[in-house]
Image (cartoon, rainbow, N blue to C red):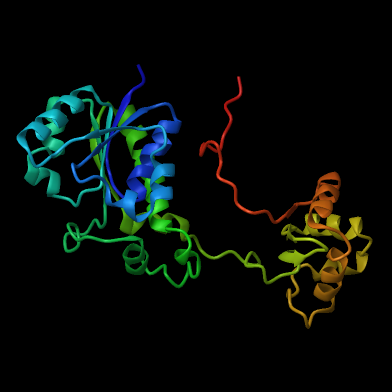
Length: 290
């Protein structure tokens, strides 16, 4: 039987961490309170996507029977994921010390907000975590469209679970107030769409994303389109007052985006047509070769 993960989480980061583990081959059982999960009513499509393939069981942790049921399940489980605020599970009498006392091999992973004592038990959401980390300006406007701390936290929680299994058990707290900092490396030059070598261009139908960042790739592109005179212009502005940018816009307008994509594949140039999003069948971004 597949190893069991108990998913006591809500909203985005915990369920996403559990889905990652499910994709890795774990059996995931969601434990929901009698009133159900608020997120199912708030965002039903996201809830269904996050929890696809998971078992669900109703457990009332405020009752003696519910607490006893959790202890029984913890004895069978390899991993438990929790997004209650620090101290909540302890006050209920089923915190990590109790559950790991019932099963020393259990990896208990709690997604918490903050490490420091002042805010350790404080509630929070993605916006709070990015604000406290000083990352709102850096990630604007991306934070309005994707929950960066939550998503990063999900992957770190899954990694914590795997590390705990490697270590033979343990209690981990993953701090959402810190996880986004792992993506806040020093800014890279020329990758914001402001240079002609790395920008979006309209075509005869759709848009193309040209990403010839390295000089040799930009040179390959220039020679492939017969524009040797552009070789020194790769990092010039992608703005209408730049004649090279205007010429590139005119060039890409001569073909459809998918035609440019086929051409670029033949020429070994990093260029893709811009496409609408389609949900993947699996969120695992790898293939294990024999």
